[in-house]
Length: 284
Image 1 (tube, rainbow, N blue to C red):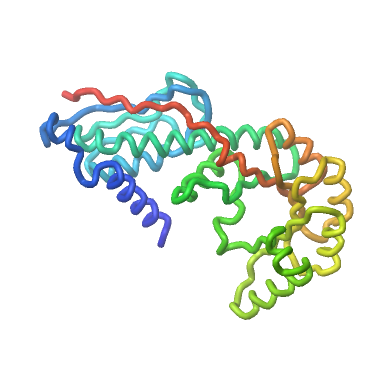
Image 2: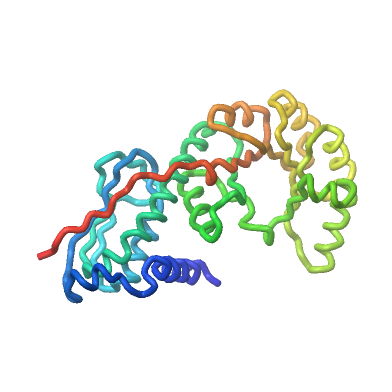
């Protein structure tokens, strides 16, 4: 499925969830050919995300809609800004309103938090990554918002990157056994995916370094002083990543330890939705 097909399916499913094909209030109150003007009003400060998706939602319900985008995705906005103006069928606008707002508020909240994390390390050679701690079935849009905010996507799912975590290691019996089995699996299936190994202590770091054959070592919940020592021990042989409980007030200290990447689940699981309204006015 292409991205455009995925977006179209999301719009169709989102509208069906809300209407099951019928907006009875609008059908009862508003003539079928009635037209209205509308505008997207920002009621919070932050980073706008999802305006392109909002445009697609409106054009889905009314292909003849006239849309003027005034503020692009990734722009910092403030209370009172108007991001979009629309003229379209009144019933269509009312049908699209809640889906449009729900996804834009969510995406803008994520983009805003991502921008704050990105700002903290803007002058350092490190990338802030998201995780799989996303809302089921809208991961695509949440990760899109992370990029809009200035951070980066890690793996999209279990299918495009191999991450050997503590549970895999414990189940396999050792780090070496887990890595060797991953290599056998990739060879058997014609794969060449990146491999991250999560480590909990310096003994496990040594085991990874001895075994080799991986892409990145992820230091899980290491103290800052331990991180710096761990990076020095790896000495550029593999990419390095810090993970676990990263916050806005700690991310810079973690970055200064010298890791290449910092993964932050909070980008998606702890963001606060931006307040946005869709105001509809009777057209002439």
